[in-house]
Length: 88
Image (cartoon, rainbow, N blue to C red):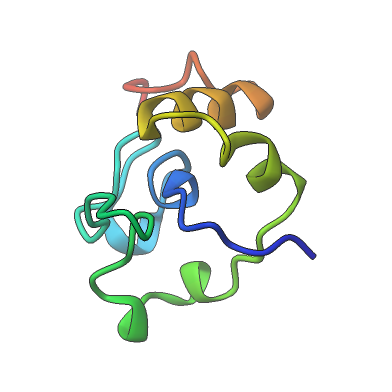
């Protein structure tokens, strides 16, 4: 299993219906990177879909990218979703 690097991609790239978060838009609970990564402001109370997420090979591919926007773009490209943003 891949360890979480707090890159923020899983909180910004996918849609999270339980939070009303659309595809490619950072979650409103995702904090800015303060040097320790992007941290969730509601982590103890996060919804089940977030709680059950397990870092995988995609995390290892997107985490090294220099910005959250670059990580989101790569995440969406991996899943072939880059053209789906705003089509909601």
